[in-house]
Length: 592
Image 1 (tube, rainbow, N blue to C red):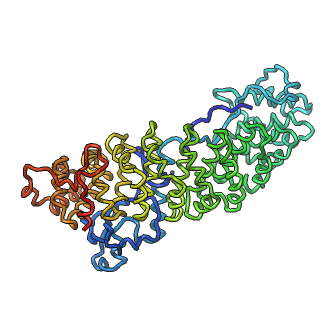
Image 2: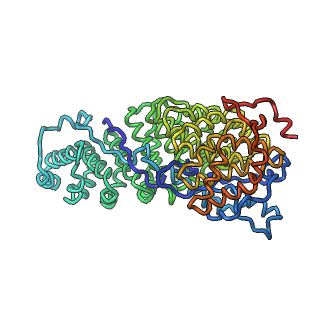
Image 3: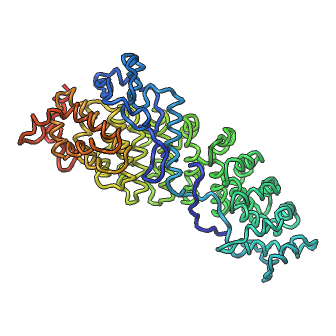
């Protein structure tokens, strides 16, 4: 059976993971998409930006998930716990981190149509089974004649009526799914699934049920409540391959409806039967159907599929990841993306089977249906622990991301920037590896020229970078030319992003102040038009934006007129026209 092109259907649950993914309607997001543990040592490092600035510029942003600075309780700010709570997720309790991370991951799944189909309708005009073709006669029946035939006692009449129903539901447009359900045919069709002496009737009945289950949730429920699941599972052991394949397809549609029916299918012991069918000898169309059905068994959360089911599927998914067929690879990667869209333990189950090197290799694929889910899976993995992120880095993800940041499709740029922001949310060692892999130039290019949904992800990367990097790393960030596009983006209408940019600028200014370089940095910001834009924001209708801009001016530019002279900013804070290296080597002096 040939399959129709996957329809783009709205995914009910799915997220980069991660954090906000574009200008579409979004969930609240936090400064990081990752729940990061073991980072408190950075506050004791004399080279750490966090250790240099213990007081946030402002303390009225408690309602924002995305601020670089958190409210300060003055009674506790001198304690280590108080200091930790001033910076992104560090020091927050695990429950809060997890809650925010779940909320912000949802956007990748809600912001656009999902790339993988939940359900598929079989619209092949004729059965490929030769035995069934011999029984086929060119007969056109009305709905009433189909109803009468399905309920007849003559096996040939039942077959012809069921086949006519299948053809009616397999037409390209407006199949009468509702009429077939309302006609009460499902119980009879389920009975036909049990007719082992009539495999062609089983096949046609399974096909009709497949297409009914491809409809609305109500129509899928009618198939389930009609008792179809267990007979379909039993057909997975049929000696007739076409019957078996059609049963796989029907079960995939049922499982794809949502977690309720997915779990009913799983509880019917379907997974061992499916895994038995996976072999190198079955037709590729059959293997594609099996892989897609397995991906639907991995899909959806609230709740996630049970741990036993995941453990059963992971070995065969790892095996299928090496197949050469792009559809098999695509659905395998989507399955792994669903399994990694969760807590660290679930991410760990996938990481522990050793698939990351292969996933990174697939991120270089020229086929978008393979590249997208492999990138999504790796992006999900780096929302996990520092160790899990390091495994992804060791697998080579950072060597691939620069090319993906420059991919011609903005959707890939966006996913790549989201993944990069999760790496930047880690310890300074991860940030250093990010720098070493040449990530800053393409990041600045996206800030300058990317679509706004991509620029937002790049801004989150910079935000996480500035709060987690060392002084030396922050200097390299400024030298890369990041300030110019950030200043230019202060005129956008997205208030949250404007506040994040103001926080980034404030943080960099504080770093420069500690290094006695604030005057030079202020001159650079003025040259870029930053002072004028920040002054304009003082009059913003949003109080938080206006107050943040005022605080920056009062704390860092109150004496700006004293050094508004006819000279350029000091080369130590300037970027070249290429935006990727220093004018003069000033790093060692700035670190002293």
